[in-house]
Image 1 (cartoon, helix red, strand yellow):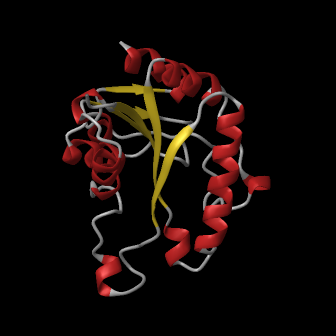
Image 2 (image 1 turned 135 degrees about the vertical axis):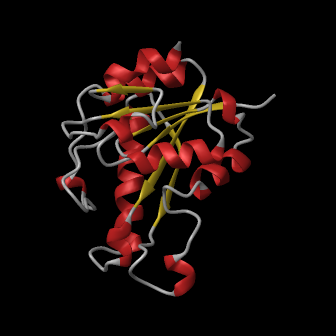
Length: 182
């Protein structure tokens, strides 16, 4: 039997997007994220993070910095009863690195990270949802065939075209959780 998951972008969905966050002391969880993710977990959803991390390609922080922060974040979620199954990330940027890195299939809006998780965790894409804060998150979810896609504004404004890529638009993950669970 295939499994279901909630895919979460990191910056702007899990934490306040302060830009290129790579240290725990700069990581600010968005209000209600633990309660909401605990609820998803209790309903049988795997929690999977899919995040673009171009700060690595830009030389702003290292892969090791990113991994250390991810382990810290996963530990915090586990302590809150909302274990994150996996953190997938794209360290690339279209203007930096080798030609192959610039043309990768993992950087959202490409679906590579989501497709890898579908294969790794034997997921049914139709039973999965994506929560992101950008149009690229929705485009990646659509390309991967996910059943539902939700945008959170997290204090930013979205164009009507951006909003049209989602099945719903909410202020935060906390507000979106009911739509995901229905």
